[in-house]
Amino acid sequence: MRDPARRLSWARRVVHAKLASEHRLLGRLAATTGRDGPRLRDARARLEETLAAVEEAADLATLTGLEGAAAAAYFRAFTGFFAPALQFTGRNRRPPRDPVNVCLSLGYTLLQFEASRQVQIHGLDPMLGALHAPAAGRESLACDLVEPLRARIDRLAFELFAEGVLRKGHFRRAGEACQLGKEGRRRYYEAWERHAPAIARLLGRICGDLVRELRGQTPAAIEIES
Image 1 (tube, rainbow, N blue to C red):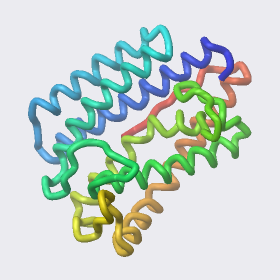
Image 2 (image 1 turned 120 degrees about the vertical axis):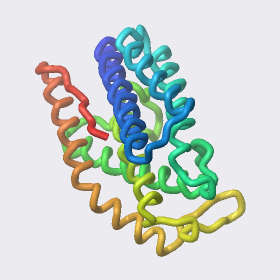
Image 3 (image 1 turned 90 degrees about the horizontal axis):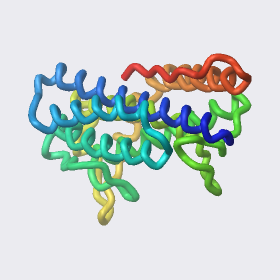
């Protein structure tokens, strides 16, 4: 991703796929739960506006600014689909401070590992990303690949709590941090193993398409179903 034009093109596709998957997920959760409200309507409208603006972003700084504003609106709406007892009021990490953020952080970590694995399998350089600039010790291309699939992890977290697979009692406090207990970890990893093969196939397809693009073939599409 050393060519600036190619890098911007790939970064636009990454952000567009991420925001589109978040928009679909909010719609799906609204239909599943029957919930609605100003935050949800605002988030979906913001995502729609940003999807259009992404195509016109002239540089990476503009693109990341658009992504950040849309992500904030998305999480304001996403929190509304969880029980108040879980105290999920927004994204937090290092350490995660509530059960939902524990599940999101764990899922994103597992997703990052699989993205790194697929990048290496396909012979790509994991350090050369587009949306994520190369940085010492960071697998920037794998970070790029994680973004469009984050909504998959978000949906998994919702389902685990909505279906009662995970409950507040599966978590414990350790100072400011919230931690997943032994039984909770078992349940989470069992759920992850059911989703992992499909995620691996999807990441593999995206990497394969990117390899073909870099060899001068059709630009890689990033199509994600939330």
